[in-house]
Amino acid sequence: MKLLIARRLRAAIALAAPLAAGLALQPACQDDDDECVVDADCPEGAICDSITDECEQGCRLDEDCRSGLICERDECVQGCRSDSDCGEGNFCSPISDKCIECSPGLANCPCAAGDACSGVLVCQAGICRYPPGDDTPTCGDDVCSPGEECPDDCGGGPVCGDGLCAPGEACAFDCMPTCPNRPLGMAPFGPSPFQCGAPGPVTLALMSDINEFWGSDLVACVCGADNPLGPYCLGNAGASSTLNQAFGYIYFDPNKLADLQATAGGSLLAPAWLLAHEAGHNVQAIHGLSSPWTIYLELSADCLAGYFIGWLACQGEINEFDVQGTMMAVCSGQDSAQTPWFDPKAHGSCQNRVDSTVGGMSAFFAGHPPEEACAP
Ligand SMILES: [Zn+2]
Image (cartoon, rainbow, N blue to C red; front, side, top):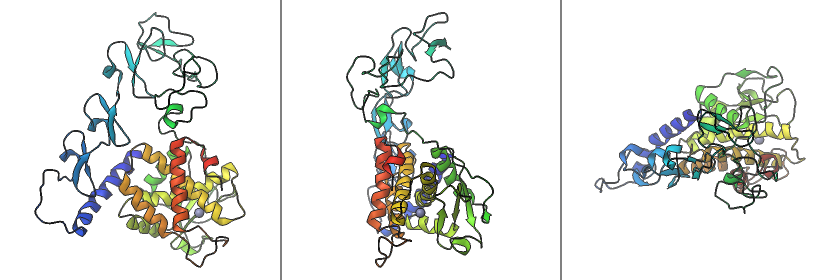
């Protein structure tokens, strides 16, 4: 389902692009060397910018780069895709995407049947591996496990960005798997206490991404006439931030999701943000995050939505167009100028809400735990 959002986002972008071009009143005649509709129209090492319809240097996938290069945050950088890129006897580190020289018996290094692998490793299918079910070594535990890529555990110094996790090192990509998810096992306790209409396929796809990230089974419901947010939740969505009967459910007005998508220039990231904000209220319940002031709970939910968006960005599923459009949609949900910050319905100003969302994204990339980074 992850790919589905990517594909749909691209489709939304492709639809929006001609509109943007039309609005810019571009001259009818121009140099079309760089003009493009899809990435495939551009030469190797370039992708099609959906806003300008011109080829620009960059990549979305490893395959967009020359061989010997990989795609990292939209840029082609030195790196390996598989062991075959690294020459005889070396392997491509799944952590750093860099070639690592193999020594006999080390983890992920080649072995022949009957060869001894270090420690608990076993020679399986020509590679020294951890036996199934055995945990991979823990960086920073002062134990130098066989094949461990942690300098301080094994007598070296920490280096950020080398794909090696050293104790106390705070580099997200050195100290955790790329784009880690945060499984919480959230799910409803029982049947929905209010009417629960079936969401459409796009909403289900967005929920699937949210559930994949949080390792959960949250359920989205189209609001019915009996919803406490108001009949059919007109223009609104809601979820419980306490462990009550409504926990695990996200109630929404489908028109609200469509409005947000329109405000974001067609990007599905905007409705995903709102659903992720509501999922954030469930995360608050699980972690016991609370505040006497509504606005702090709401900004915390915005932050948790941003945290999820960081994960999408990390995987290259969204681009600047999506993020910028979504920030406009986030702003559209700001309080009116007359709403005091302590109002029980306060959600925050445009600036408050954008800051919280961006703060959540940064926290994801810094590797901070969501319940700390987004505490109200
Ligand atoms: Zn909320």
